[in-house]
Image 1 (cartoon, rainbow, N blue to C red):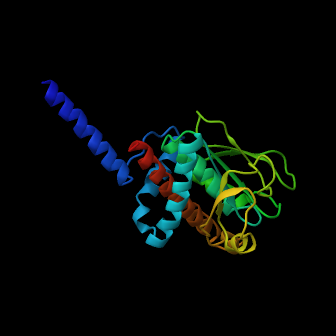
Image 2: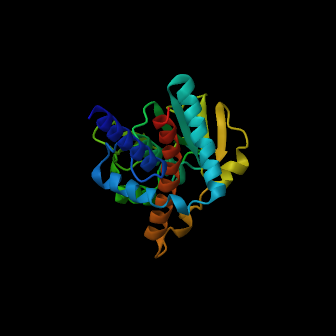
Image 3: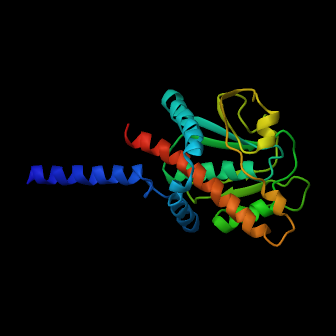
Length: 240
């Protein structure tokens, strides 16, 4: 009976790890239900990511794994020129993905090379996905409180340069989310790793009939690729 029970436990463990390997479940989902459902749906799109793109995302995952192994902490700064749209999406999806897979020690940030403001259309796309976003009175560069879980502190989101506080000054992974920042920032001071994963700018749809659709698509694309990245980290953690 003991052998039978042990075999059953081993079977369950093997199945769980296999499911995690193929990204069909998360280790835990302490997220708002709508957001957790959105990410579970995004995981179904992993196979649509190209092999070339997956290789880049694996570089980011390897950087996170290496930092966690060495120090127990990993910091990522998502960089785009104006820190207005794609870099915020990267930061917030990375925070949510780390929570989705229950990966402790991950801190996510965003920044640019110029200061503008967190774009309202990007905010709407993220809110539609399940983030709970509250903001102050109108100002040139509002600071928003973005929550993804009742168990985690909300993220303070606003436009800043990548080297400005509260972003770390060194020992971080720089993820370049736009081609302009990639071309104009070949060297990111303080970064232990720099990986370029540029996305098309949803700004091109501003004021057009397809505006909401384009922002929604870009939000889902970034969510899917960031979630894939952290699924690789989770797989490594699960396998020791």
